[in-house]
Length: 381
Image 1 (cartoon, rainbow, N blue to C red):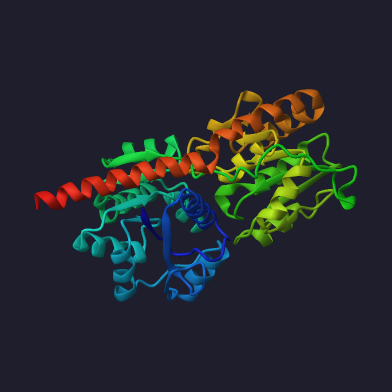
Image 2: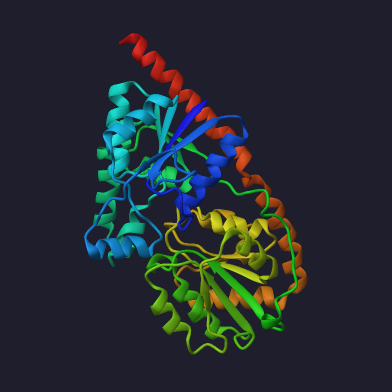
């Protein structure tokens, strides 16, 4: 198949959606498909380059701090991309995809879309994450202005598929994990010299309010192991300065930086425990990568997060928003190294179910279904 990815950002893997898009593209290509990308930028990675959409300064700073940028739709470039492909797959419900979907409809090009942007990801950045009416309104706007135009939607988890069904999304929802590279597998390395004798507790994710790195920092204060714990917060985002201040009085202040994939492999190999404290999550690929690498995860049982599905038992779940509950779970695993080692093996085995090749095969089925239905539609016309 000739598959077109319509993705605002593809070149710089600094956010979860872009990272997933790049990996999916490679997995589909490895299976013999031709894949091209229309996105911001002009490089070997982008086949149909677009200019960046200019935002007001405040909005631009907020978007850039999340590792994101948006593409300015261009009719001529979109037409060339859509004329090339057998099917177009749209990643985000913003200007590029809105324009591209309308053009694809007029041109008779089969289309699918992915639901990667949880409304709470937007509202938490604006300090309104718990405003139910606003979140519901965004779900409905996404549905009525964009997703209703598609017959097939890729949902990374059962959780988000159910959220969409409850909000009147009536198109076919394909639950397909974003998947992880098989390179994320059981692996243990000795700690670097500077961390000798310390307990490494890692959390991966944007420095945003909904991710709750602040809760992990607070939980360390309540842990019996606080003097030995070195927390590593892998990521970037607008809350970096605030988190640095929150953690400044810990016996070992947080290590905060963005890790490349190679650096991430190494970090996970010498980490002792992985924490995922987020209140909002469509899937949390970073958590899958961690437990596939042989780490016991400790996950917030948040009702608006898909991540609790990965816990093998209650020992890996803590009460969302409760630092004492998180500290208790950390201390349990650190008190019981033999149990931790057994569970690490079980989690690594569970991680094998999320390999990219299986996800790519399911995506191909979705694309073929969309192509077949589109052909029948235009035959009738």
